[in-house]
Image 1 (spheres, one colour):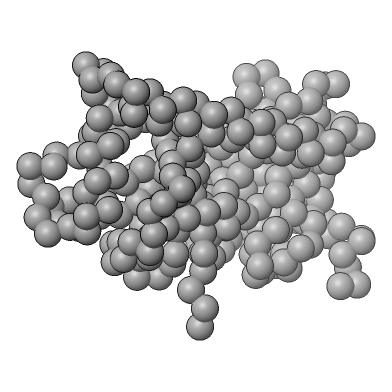
Image 2: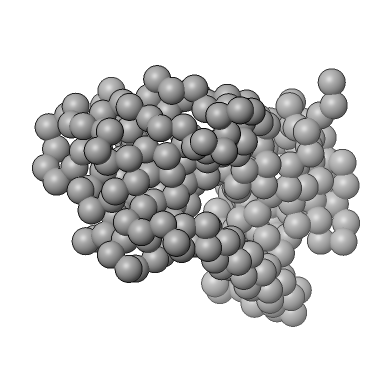
Length: 268
């Protein structure tokens, strides 16, 4: 079985005694999906290469490609006094990150990397802006609707809306509950949409009354469920307000379970 190769952005290295792992945003994680937040990879077992300002490492399950220009600007300083027998390349990189995090230090090498990371941040922001424009274009002619391409159920994906003549993007928020986490999309006065992530299923429990239609496309490589409806990979569903009625006590919202499958996908 081939080991997946994952490109990372806004990544960071974490060192605990004599082992290390990564966090960041994965472009295409085999389990978490596209542009997924990875809070904790498995242990880094090998540094494949560290040249041309790109780190390539292997964990127990994957190979991660980490350009230094896409290093997170939220530098996490590692306590290097407790580091034991760790690979020299990781040690060297951790020291560099610590130097970037130390405002009292400044030299030409540090300035080079700060400018490199600033360049990478601009590239990532431009890519995000282009992606947001693409999502909005898909809902431009669908009034009072929201559109969601699902690749990461547990952390959520960007949501596009066209409500009351206004269009925009809402990023997901993760609400950590005592018994069940939930994904929230909230844009004051325009959008309030919420669901419970349950593995490969989404259980919608609330959306604001001004949303007439919810459009969801499954862009994962395998089937998912929205409530009890199976959504095949690549398929799109449209959930109409009139077919979705209240199941939880929540003001100014509708809830339910009935789905209308996009006719373009019925014969797939």
